[in-house]
Image (tube, rainbow, N blue to C red; front, side):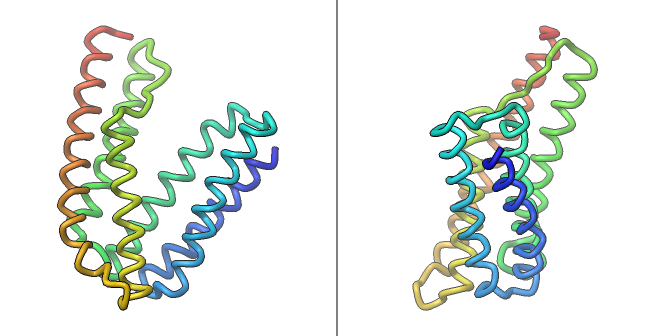
Length: 178
């Protein structure tokens, strides 16, 4: 299916984005991130518009999104665009969610651990901060540098709240053996 090929192409861009960010080469990273973002919108539109959706695509797209966020945050942390403690917090939350979902699927009847509202808000915040940090480096004259620090704290708060929310949901699913 064409949307899946677009998603796979977006995933193939990911290491190049991460390397550019780790080198603080925001001029190279920005157009790659822009293409990745447009491709994310296009693959979803194509899947809906032409009925090209698939179970594989439904699983692949969020994996591609999480991979992009993880690699971008690793690159931004390595290149000094974001504080390392935030990178650890964001990636730690995602690892905890994966481990929780895996444990629930292995030890209960649960076969899904869907994103929560807080998780979605947190991910949107993380993507926004990543974009602002890249813009601050790519076009310092636009004045985004001053928004990175306050947005960092907002994203940290959202990440912690969503982490607790996922933990609460996982505990509830475990107790009720869903």
